[in-house]
Structures are given as structure tokens and as C-alpha cells.
Image 1 (tube, rainbow, N blue to C red):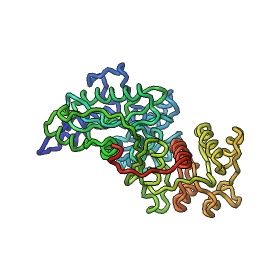
Image 2: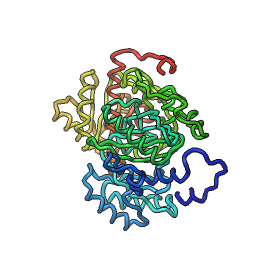
Image 3: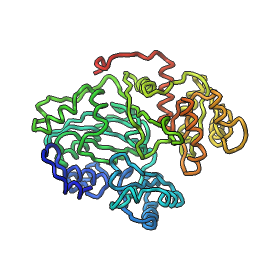
Image 4: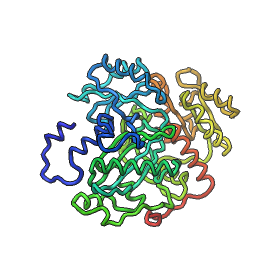
Length: 443
């Protein structure tokens, strides 16, 4: 990519220098030391672990060797991402998360990742597990920096930022964490001499802040941020790029009295056979926004805006991977308290019963007993689905559940974070009425 930028001739050269755009994208991979930008790692900036380039490879054998070295890393659970080097920061086409050697061999042998990457090497990235991802949009003229918005993702890091719901302002981050994110953003904007818009993606795990991507350019989040905060940041960025000083606009940080939730809209229903599980490859084709003074209500509005139902009663089906079982207990208990019935497959049902929750057993499709879960979904008995899974076999076995939910228009969530937010939204809607107000009344 750097070579392509170097050879590119553009008649009008305004805004952030092209070479700094390349530097920012390389920085996200950890190939450029932060200290080289005049920002010492001891200040709190860290190399990204979720989309950090740990290795570049050109063959299956080399990929397996590098993955073995990564297994010695003790940052959370080891998840490895494989993608072509020139598309990682865009929509992550071809990116796959693998969890063991067998899955890696299968992925590399059966995917087009080497073809997609062309002459560039294939990247192997080391992933954090259950980290909170954050997007920050900022304006800079090379001297001054204005933080336009800090967005906390609902889904954990590992789901593509374009597919993840997010909240502005952050709904669960402590003020000191937000302040540190803003400080790091300003430091990087100045170090990269950004002129115009800038987007940075962070991950937070166990109090540690990791830099995932540094994009010295406009991001897809700009329209959402502009509407949420009531500031025409794209227009201001264009004028800054043309030479106006940022301070001449008199921008000041606003303490918002409302919260805005962006939700992705997916085209799954138009493509028969496509699995709806979320991952590192972007699949959404649009987005909607929910606004309210309460996060849970704003999230519920975003779901309705995206075409999903918010069930206020009925039966919930839950089947989650082992890593998620502890985290699903609280939302299921809350649903039971609200009067919902809960059904679950064997492992999940046994776990929830061990926690004192009354959950009915339902058979998986491949177990061969009827009625199984898909039968009950098609008969209209299920009104909400929580389904998380991992591994090629488990994904294949549960694909019919997610596909049936889509075709039957049953709201479904494939991450625990999404399930938790959905339950909060249901409780909020049950507790009152949804208020419809014009956008201008919030901003």
C-alpha cells in the first residue's frame, strides 16, 4: 500500500499528507514504534493486540510456525486473525478468526486469503478476548485537536467496527478512561500532523488501553457523530483542510444530556444460505440511530429502527459457547423475572439450572429428536434468540438456528454484549413508553 501511495500523483494536495496516512495505517500494525512519533509508550500508548500485525506470511507452513510462537503470548485467550495485508483496515474482506491448528490448516487450505492479498503478504494478527472496543473521531489542523466523539462498541472487540452497535457518549466507561482515550487521540493526531478528520480504534481490557487502528482520514462514523452531537464536523474538516485554523470555529466539548446508539443494518435476508454470525469481516450495508436520555431505551429504538422487534413477552431460546455461560446468567435471570419463558440446548440448560434458573430443555437439530429447536421456531413458539458459538463444527451445526431466526423475523443476537443490551432494552420498554422527538430537540 505504501508503494501505491508513493507512486500516486494527485493534482490537489490538501489535508493530511498522503505519507502520513500510510504511516498511520502502518502504526496500527505495530511496525512503527510509537516512540518514533515523539510519543513514548510509557505515556500509556500501547501496540494494538486485536488488530496488531504479529507476523506476515506467504505460505501455510510459515503461518503455522508463526501461530505457534503467538501461543506463548499470555494476553487473554489466543485468537488468531488471518487476512490480506492491503484490506485489513477497510472491510476486512477474507479475514477469519481461527482458534487452533486444525482450524488454521482448514482455513488456509480452503480460503482465498493468499489470492486476495496478491503480491502483499498475508497477515496473522493476535486477538484479545472479551475486550471493549472504542472508536474516537477527532478534528485537527496540525496544531489543535478537537475530540468530536467517543463511541463505545456494544459488541466486544473482534466484531468489525462497521457491524458493531455503538453508544455515544460511552455508556459504561469511567470518566478517567474516556479522558485517557482523548489524550492519546490528541497525541497521535499531533504526532501524525493530521489536517482534517481522524479516527482511532482502541480496545480496553483489564484497565489496559490498546491502539488498534490509527486512520488519519474520515471514517464511516462521521455522519453518526455529527448528528449525535449537533456539529457539522465534515464541513469544518473540509474548511480546515483548505487552510482555516481549527480554533477559529470556537469548538467546545459538549456534555450531552442524551445518548445515541448506532446499529448496523444487514442484507442477510437477500442472500439465501448466508450465516448471520458476526465476525471480523464487515457485512452491514447501512445503519440506523436511536436517541434517548436513557441508554437502554436508545438501544431499543435502534433495534426498532433497524427492523427488529422488541418482544415484551414470550419464549427466549438460548444456546451459548462455554466461554459465555457465566456472562449469560444475569440477563437470563432478568428475563425470567420479567415473566419470559426460557428454553435452551443441553449444555446451556444444564449450566443455567445449576445456577438455580428454571430453563426448559430443547433438542438440537442434529440430535434427531422432534420437535427440535428449529421446529419450535418455525411454529412461532420462540420470540427471541441468543446464540453464540465458536469452531467450524459448532458454527455449522447452529447455522440453521440463525437462518431460521432471520427468515421467521425473530430477533437474534450472536454476542453476549448484544444480548445484555437487548435485555436492558426490553426492560426499559416494558417500564414505560417510547418517546418520539425530533433530532434537533436533543442537540
